[in-house]
Every structure is written in structure tokens, then in C-alpha cells.
Length: 136
Image 1: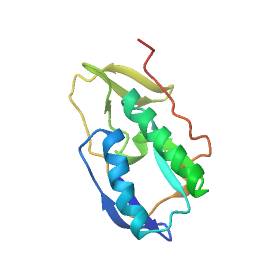
Image 2 (image 1 turned 120 degrees about the horizontal axis):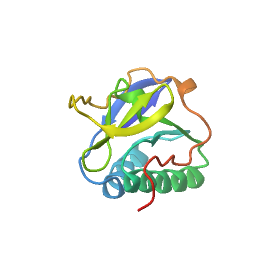
Image 3 (image 1 turned 180 degrees about the vertical axis):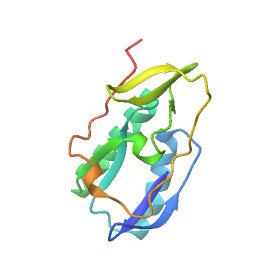
């Protein structure tokens, strides 16, 4: 999902079920024809290792090319702190000690939703991906 915000209010949403590496160039091709971007905000954890990496490389490159800052926050912000699918039967959970990886016996999930009003205070300038899963 990609949202366009003007004066911190959501004015347009783009969604695509393709892998991030294929979806982002298509979505941003359309966006760049219609809008002037002065900042990029994304979720840098948790999630698919490849998706996070592809998103970061694409958005960081765009950030440099457009001279627009890149900010990041946890994905839990956009799904009400519900578990996020990891690998196999493992899920990421937000707990007191941080993000943990475990089974999801209740099968709880939640959809990601872009907020109507963007709270820039939840994003940080440390935009590099945060990988939770160990290297294989």
C-alpha cells in the first residue's frame, strides 16, 4: 500500500498485490506523474526480508534522486499491533521486550490500514531496515 498525503491528510491510496520489487516502480511511476514528493515514509520492520530490502533500496534511491527525506517506523503502527506473518508457521508479535517471533495459535491477524491523518512523530530518521529473522 502507498498513500499520498497532503497537509498530513490521506488524499489517495494505491494498492498492489505484486511483490514489492514489481509493485513499487509501477505505483511510483504513476505517482511521480501527478505529484511532487517532499518526503517518504515507510515501514522498515517486521516482515518479509526481501520485501523490506527491496522497499528500502527503491525508496532510498528515490529519496536521493528527489532530495526528499526518508523516514521509517514499525509495521505494527498500521495494523493495530496485530501479529504479522513471518516465515512458515512463525509470526512476529509486538511485546514488552520488543518484536518476537513465535507461533500464532489463535490465528490472529489484522489488515494493514493507512491512517487518514499521518502522524509524522511516529517515524524516525533511522530508515534502514530492521531484520528480525536470522540469516539462513
